Length: 302
Ligand SMILES: Cc1cc2nc3c(=O)[nH]c(=O)nc-3n(C[C@H](O)[C@H](O)[C@H](O)COP(=O)(O)O)c2cc1C
Image 1 (cartoon, rainbow, N blue to C red):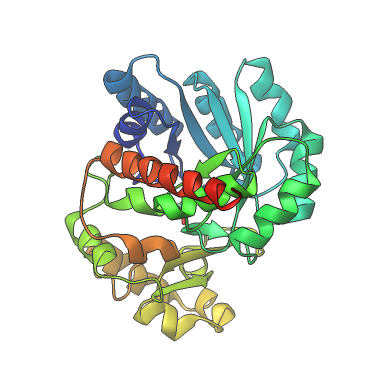
Image 2: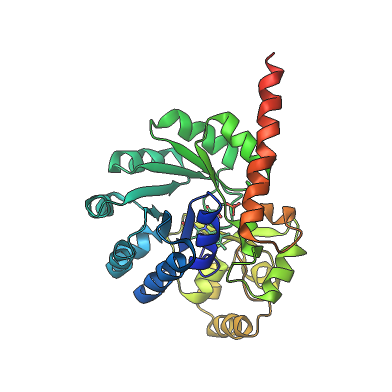
């Protein structure tokens, strides 16, 4: 969730009792990972945190994984691609491995690779994801693997957390609600756009990757706020790849923060966001909201 999820946001969440994760981008400098880890420790000391990496990006730029290991997190997430080649190196450094999966097949690959925790990421999620909804995927993955499974995609309130815990998930992995947290590296203009978007206004698209020549594997598209640019180019990705004008337009409008053209990745739970708040308050509200619902669900059984 780069650049929104830097060391400050991760620290606020780890201080609140969650496991804060620092997001990295495929083109980030390795030093920025170390800077975020320093920022984390400046606010949260030696509390646990994670670093999120994309397996396909690590395959092309192993220095990203080396920097993540040097930052000494509690866990490294290796998602979007086979984590197998990297698991031993991370374990040898005494670091746990998490892997986000989007299908039963990729869950089985992650389990066989020896990861410690699986995140079943449904298509409702913000950022890059697969095509299967969180609830069907969670049921399928929980039945397919022996490892603990955490649910991701569309969980933003106590209701969502209660639902996945009741289904057997070990927890929830949450991104979109924290895009508007006070500690997120999100601009004012972007926050304002998130807050006025509803659940029907996202699109699962590869156009923003194609326009930036970012080589995401084709099975992963990104869930972003739908805008004029996505409407114009969805379904015409090859023409977009061949259009320097369109690529320049995206770059230019990104600089100007014109989000009718530039992208803002966000999940369907964007429709639950109403205010900018400290990350700890958002996390506590989700956790506290789940508790009475779970008690009530138990009481249904008598
Ligand atoms: C803006 C944004 C960027 C993201 N980028 C990444 C990423 O680079 N790597 C990754 O593993 N997950 C990424 N994610 C997905 C999260 O890890 C997580 O699956 C997702 O946020 C959970 O669903 P939710 O957004 O509905 O809460 C991103 C999510 C968002 C919102």
